[in-house]
Image 1 (cartoon, rainbow, N blue to C red):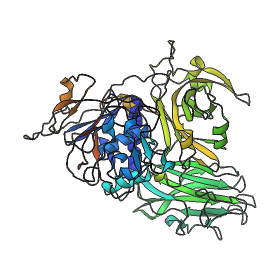
Image 2 (image 1 turned 60 degrees about the horizontal axis):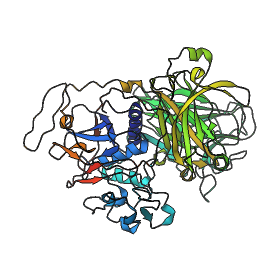
Image 3 (image 1 turned 90 degrees about the vertical axis):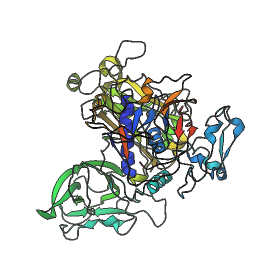
Image 4 (image 1 turned 30 degrees about the vertical axis):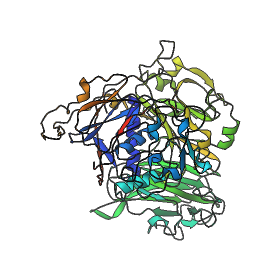
Length: 637
């Protein structure tokens, strides 16, 4: 990533890479002298070439307003060889392009291409693709430029949340992915084989986990289906209604083989038993000295009895063959028990905090515009206190949209006094969780905000991310608790209310937000250049050099007139291309603009398999993102 790329964008780019690793076999690594690589920079908008153009440094722009994870994933899908969905040869069977409603000069953005240029990969047309334009793309008036043949999909096209199922199917099909890089396991217990899980030989007599569709004392339904499907809806239950106190049962996952040395275990737990009933998480780890495995206690889960499924995250740090073990222990009660559902295990970092909003549809319908509701205050690993402000009824001027803002708050005085102010490069991520049972199929919606220590409050000399006791307002909670809430930064267009009512954003009536604050100050520091680099060959000469310098960028010495953009042609020569601009449909409101950090970080795409087709060059602009791309078909990378 080039030094002008915003720090917040750098953090979101790394999050996008994690989604690729979780959901495909595609991986990204820092450039270390490879012949062809991607250079991410802050250009005038968001744009990318399509496929590997084999020009050495291939530029991909993440400009202002592009720091949304789906936008970044979208651009890297272009780099991996994907065109827009409505460019398919069969698009006229599914959508109508209303040409006389398109802004003059933008018609080329609605070109379609034959199968040899834009392959469907034998996947049906996908209205929900993140590569599809919205109905308002490049409109010259108020009427849509794209009309779906099935009206129900009119407001579906143009989503920028996450990969759709078909996006992933095509990506994994193109690159022959048989598995993903960081996914380990997922289980909703719908199949009788319970995902290869086993009852431990160490279980006490008559103590076992049972696969059931309802349990005496609760729950009455599983979490996956919530009673919506006849003949489905199973979970695992350990009854604590009978048997001696201290009776225990261990449910063990299949054998797993880690690669990264850190994992996140996520599951839903329903405790209908006694407050003394316990759930413990263990790992059984194998090596040559312990062929039967050694148990290691990870955590005792705090889950008081209640009438709902509770979401839990447990961080693991396993580096050898292992199983995850769920141990249920009976307390002194005589009713109910412990239930598990929707277990996911991946080699990713766990979110730090969970904010659950009950009866969320009612909250959406009854919260007035410009009225915020706030999460509890959470504390980061570094000791900073923060919270999320949500505008369910939208901000003024943005009807039908959810607004989301991150705030620093005061915590314990002694802790606040020991922190560095203004807060430096702390990235707060606010994620509305798509509660699909399988983590790979989730289309979470998220935004991130980073604390720039040089940012000031508009119209003052006060630092925006300074101690909330200095720049914030005093808040008194209903229980009398007092604290200070600092100014907020975020977006008025987090997600439309219509999309919030779709998929599994609301389940059992509730919405779940996952909140994290992490230190990304390391992204401010420049990456050391590789000790050996290779200058990409031109059409006639091939040569390499041993040097600490990166290959020269021909565009450095080129100035393009009339807002043109310098790109490299097929021969690696600098040429100016016209840049088409459009209004930003999803505008992001922030209290200030992050300062430019000094950082050089080149990225190379590594993939499992390759496809090579003919080069073609077209100019394409992405809807609402001011994007110009010089497109070619997918190439071996």
